[in-house]
Amino acid sequence: MKSHLYLLILIFVAFLLGLFFVWRFQQPEKKTAPVSLLTGSADQANAFALNNFTLGLLFTKTEDQQWTVQRVKNDLVKDLEQKSAGPLVEVDEQTLQARTDDVNALLTTLFAIKDLELVSTTAGESNVFEINKFSLHVILFDENNKEIGRIFFGKQGTEPGTLFVKRGDSQNVYLMGTDPRLMLLKKYEEWLTK
Image 1: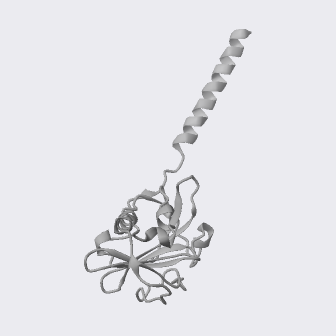
Image 2: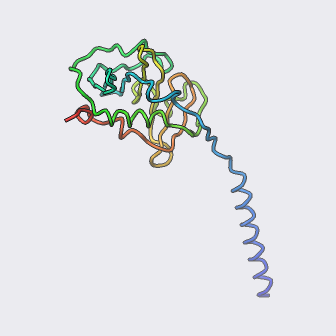
Image 3: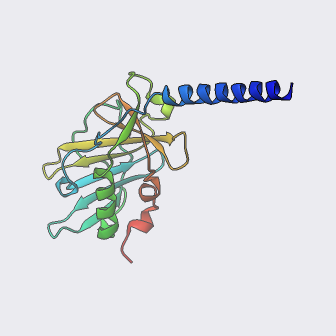
């Protein structure tokens, strides 16, 4: 009788293991792709606006490759996919020297964002991920003040340290495995050289 009980337990455990392996290998793979939010390189950016609901900063590269920063009226876009005519915004502060190493590090980080997991391709679903005109976003411009890229940052992703993002010219929403908001949400004074 004991041997029958052990045999039944063994069969039950084998059945559970079989179910686990079937479940494990039938999980859909994450749709990670080598998608870049920005094309080109950080060297192409001659200016960029950093905007969110409470803060607007305009960074401009000088002829000697240094960066300046000024507070500006937020350039909250009317349409997430509408290109900006240029970083022409009402300035309410003087232009000051920025920490060029910090600005270059931020740009390098933004241009290096790759291998994103596609989470939505549905138009109008961006708000679910807290991506809207009030979201933290960066608009980059070349030397002719032509927009070369725009990234919107949404809410934190499903795991700590992840973040939902959207490129300005696309309806796709991605999950990125890092969260650069600490670099983006510095106070104005933290960008300035001492």
